[in-house]
Amino acid sequence: MPRYAITETAGRFVAGQTNTGVGAVLELTEKQAEHEVRLGSLRALDVKPATKAAKSEKAAAKPDAPEAKE
Image (cartoon, rainbow, N blue to C red):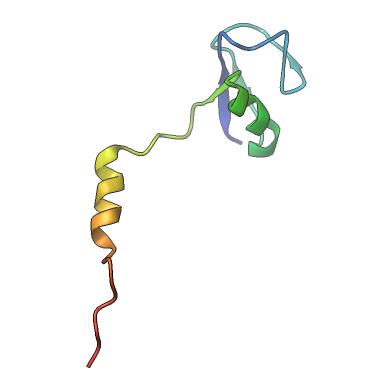
C-alpha cells in the first residue's frame, strides 16, 4: 500500500485516523488518501514528482503532425 506523511496543515483527524503528529506515516489506499492529499494534509512518500527534463523529453518524442506514409 502507498505510504503518506502527515503535514503541518493537517487537522485533528486525517483520513479517518487520529493525527499522531507531523511526519507520521500512514499506509492508505490511493482512494483513502485522495482528499487529504488534495487538501495538503498528507504528502505521498512513494511517488516521485516528474522533472521538467522528463516532461520535455516526452514532448520532443511526439511529432506535431503524423508523417506521410508512402
